[in-house]
Image 1 (cartoon, rainbow, N blue to C red):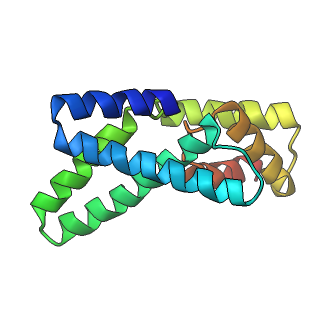
Image 2 (image 1 turned 120 degrees about the horizontal axis):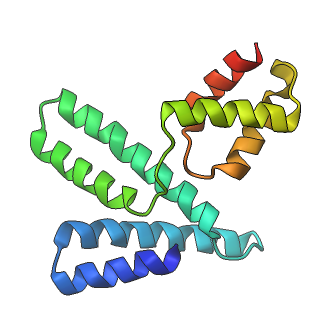
Length: 149
């Protein structure tokens, strides 16, 4: 994942694509910041799963900004946020559809043997392990809770 981001950054620099260069520079800076923080805690550099989480967080931040700018009538700033979201999404795995999420939840419940709401953590942990970065767990947790009754 790290190498793909670096290669895309170099390509954007050579192409003089300012928006893409700035976005990927921000991604690299965030990764380096996390690496430095991890080093201070005695951990190694970020793994691909951690970079995935970081990218998802960056997309979520930009989606919030996009909503605010759109509501305020700032189409110019909203366009910038939308472009950055599109660039970041290139590095994220394709998300599951609603039907696929429902099936994944059913499979995770069967796999973990979950019987009630007290087993919700097991189901979520199973989903995170099987579908890293492909499910919005903020929304999925409500569906898991409903499925468990």
